[in-house]
Image (cartoon, rainbow, N blue to C red; front, side, top):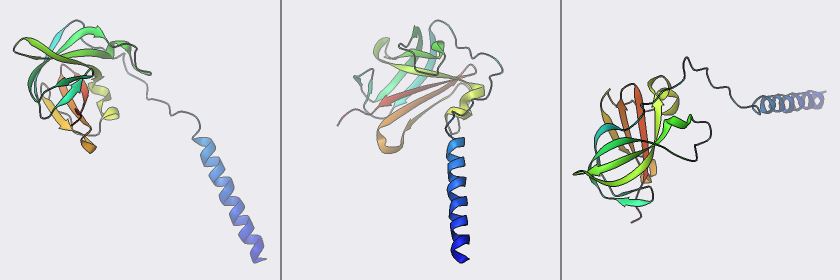
Length: 158
């Protein structure tokens, strides 16, 4: 009789696990957007940031220092899967009027930033530069005009 209950318990556990696995095979639905996200068109100066360490931008070295960051009208291609094409663009890093590097920026509308990044955002009109876990990337995060601009720069090889 005891063996019977053990077998019933094991069978119930297997069926529960199988049901739970079957439920997670379909992709999670994204919440509906109230409106289509928009990004500024054309060039836009986003601000000045200080990069604390050597990184690479578009595969080329970018030395530590202060840079003016400018959003360009050029869209990144090929477009990343699941993104709106106009929300993946190129930014330029300049010093004294000379472009020193460029990288792809992800533009995230204010209404969606909590779904993308867990950290507290910079104040409106501000920026934040962070060395991410593992010291493999530097994230430049700019909050301007109702959008968040996220740039991930790989650390330069030592």
